[in-house]
Length: 109
Image 1 (cartoon, rainbow, N blue to C red):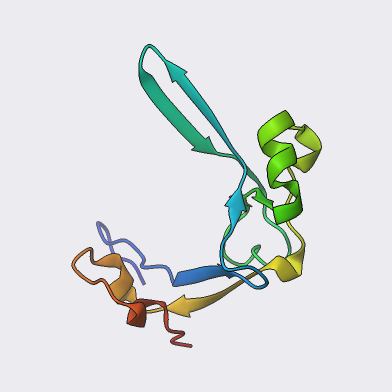
Image 2: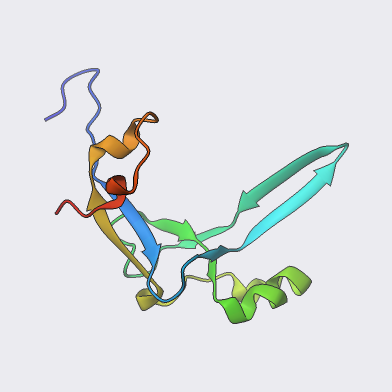
């Protein structure tokens, strides 16, 4: 239960790709008046991620990297397949910047 002024601490998750070592996110970039900006594009969460959040980054498959960079086709802006992404709960210790080890991504549940 949360009292007044207290925030409920939600579970923390390690989210990772199941087939590749890294994710490739769709993003947009602009440089205007020597100011560079970048944003990751999001979409509605797929079935796998629905329990974590209603939105998720657009994760591009490696075969679509070059197409996105060359064309930015909107048809690539969709949730990835459910089996491309997985997650598990991790320790609240991940929230402290002083903590920095691989132990932080170990599953706790």
